[in-house]
Length: 130
Image (cartoon, rainbow, N blue to C red; front, side, top):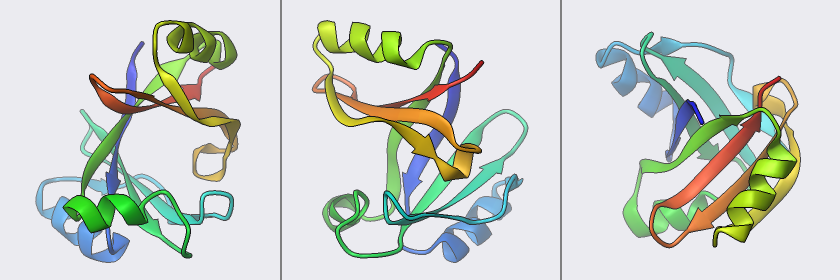
């Protein structure tokens, strides 16, 4: 599978954006509110790598615990999938644990995504690419 992006948990998208701009990144999108996951998201790129900055928007979101444990940091790699349902099933059969079922992601044009966890590599995300 091809890497789509690296997800960063950040306390402030605006502060992180400024730092990543110093490293040559530029905004690829507007900041998007994801009400399902209770986060705000901004994609940035430097032509060779795409990152996703994810900031908590409400309490009870998946980013809070990461920020409390380690502070702002990368926490998942997203991979493109041509058949997300099948790939998620195959990974589950190989020992991955589904932590978020397939659902639409507003920041990715409502493409389907799902999150899985492996004790050996951590959290991954799959995004449906047609």
